[in-house]
Length: 346
Image 1: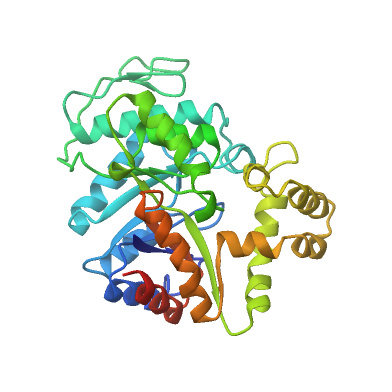
Image 2: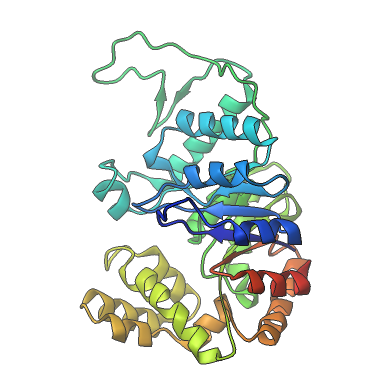
């Protein structure tokens, strides 16, 4: 099992902090990932990281597809590949309708169809086997619809990128995981439990079978985001994670369309998911945080003293032995926590 880290940059002067990144590189972590919502973007911090490291890979976890055309994403990937010695990894995802329609002003559409088209277009651009053409539901290249001049023509990238760029998708719904297994090289789920790994790997394997390419989990990287809070007081560490959990489960989406809430329900926490959402949407955030079960934190995160974290990592390593997990992406880990995890895993 490999280890990676999630770097969170919130616009601090001087750029992202590099102490955790450089320590992760020294310890043998495989990659650094950055995300985006509706503040900082995912790509700029990755360029910053790649310029200040020499061995560790770096990827977008994730780029919102509707924020960039597939061609723009492919150009970004090709450029970062060339500048970094092929250390860039591409992670993409649909985000949710509140962000895509409320922030980007774009229709959310059909996220799984968009994902299939997006990956197909990026791979065509990187392969350079022919000038780019694509006629799909979300993307028409060359564009010939309303407002078109009729002057567009199929083009081929003037760069010669590596066509073997690894593409990850962010998914945790059964349909999203099936799509990942069908078209991607890896998937980045949230709220994964090593004891319930089949909730992720089952749909991924179904997608692989549907694609008919003879792939298995050995050819695929299941790379869950795992929150870390290390300290001597176990309950204090759990409580430190609950505000973020409550935000995602209760408020990241409408009552009728919250993917994180749905995932918690699939994992067997239906009553807690309902209580968290009711409290959060009702403006009772403290109540929403208190409703996050300790058991859910223990199952999906790494919390508590170093020895407890090392013990919990044994369950993740056991899941990795059958291919259910390829890489753990640690979020919120201090440099000391990175060392503890590396000692137990690498």
